[in-house]
Image (cartoon, rainbow, N blue to C red; front, side, top):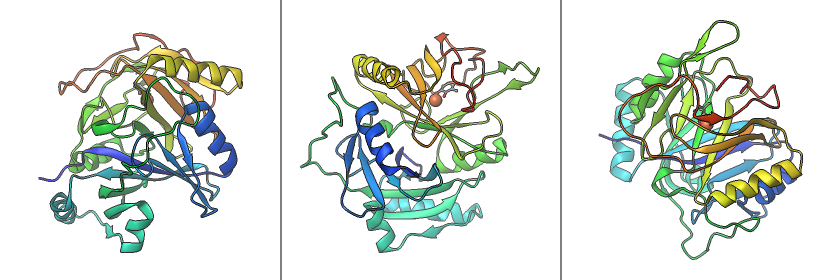
Length: 298
Ligand code: MBD
Ligand code: FE
């Protein structure tokens, strides 16, 4: 059985590369690496060569997401599993693998059409200490929990759930949220390691492929500092500081230079392996700036 082990990397298409570099470093604290290609910047969050590539190609949306499998045997088994399920994929060439700094990758699409890659063997630069883009008290929480989580566009939630189950994720509906229009939002959350969710969907129609990327600091003071910096720069905050019912992380959501959200967090609990659902968050997460697809009563 081959299962994905973490959400390992992301590619983001951006129109303003320099604004993005400044945001990632000065607001989030990521290490920005320019290797001189001219069309991209790398963002480091730990010892990996990168966790995020910013591609200056203008669409201001998710370009691709990379799910890790443990090694070459799991990589081969995943191809057999996808073939048996009738899911089309291509095997990345050596050039494509080295562009992503991995030993091997597959390219496919999830049922929502989101470009998806399954890879093994990332380049880890153990000789190059992580150097944050602004002073940090601690680190980004990655390791076996991967980058964080994404909320994705899916028109067919059941099809999306079957696809991510095939990849090895588990989960289901974790909230029933009564909406002002009388409907009940039933977002779906899925995990593949200790991170309580690595992917979620089912929050209704979305303009972009991605609503938000969540990442986590090891130290509360880094979340507080990020919050002060966001407020100081008058960056739109879509959801104020609050604590989620499912992962119990303290988080807030603010706009990035592409006009979608980054969720900054701290203190998430691990996935429990037992399904539950909630009707609201623990506290906070008040709605502030509207129009970012998070105008929901949490
Ligand atoms: C999350 O991370 C989230 O983004 C939402 C909407 C609900 C619970 C946890
Ligand atoms: Fe989230």
